[in-house]
Amino acid sequence: MPEKRVIKYYVLCNHLKDVVRTGWKVWKVKRERLESVAEHIYGVQMLAIAMKSEFKYDVDIMKVIYMLALHELEEIYIGDLTQFQISKEEKKIIGSKAVAKVLNNLLDGKEIAKIIDEFDEKKTKEALFAYYCDKLECDLQAKLYDEENCVDIKDNQDNSTLDDGRVKELLESGKSWSEMWLLFGQNTYDYDKNFMAVSNYAMNNDIRDSE
Image 1 (cartoon, rainbow, N blue to C red):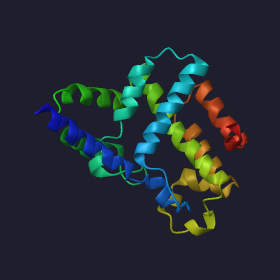
Image 2 (image 1 turned 60 degrees about the vertical axis):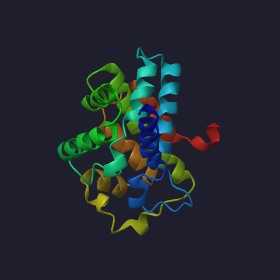
Image 3 (image 1 turned 45 degrees about the vertical axis):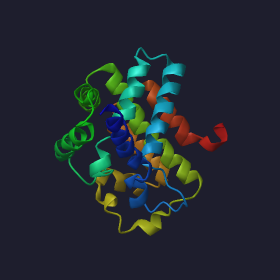
């Protein structure tokens, strides 16, 4: 019954509105309302549209938006796991099983799964563009929270993320919390000059004033 399949898929995806992004909980972001996975998906899609508009990337933006709409489906079942909590290999295994479970009853399930696989493999220009948008959006959200003074580093002594040498080095060098996020992204992901420029702009300006 197609109408039942539509509703089942919709209800499953609706759960992502209530899944708070793990990074904000780990860093004890003090804010009445924290970003959900669904809100991150919206944010990264809007970022992708702006990056395509202003830097004229040669990508199929509709495919990118579709890819980004789907790229967190696994989190319906496995939750939002950060790179400090699970290896890429393990996440790929359990993530694939979760995606298959979500898409099990959709007639186009296999085709949708291919789009998610393309994103995860990061071999096409659309997948790479979407991946960089995904990473940069997270750093920009951290910057916004930092501008609201939502994070106290001194209140994070028990945060296991500080065990990561890259994170620890950046914070010990005197960088702010959001500078750490932005520099970590710049040092970890192979951004091109445009993504690097946006990241640097965010680091050097109050982005809430960009409205």
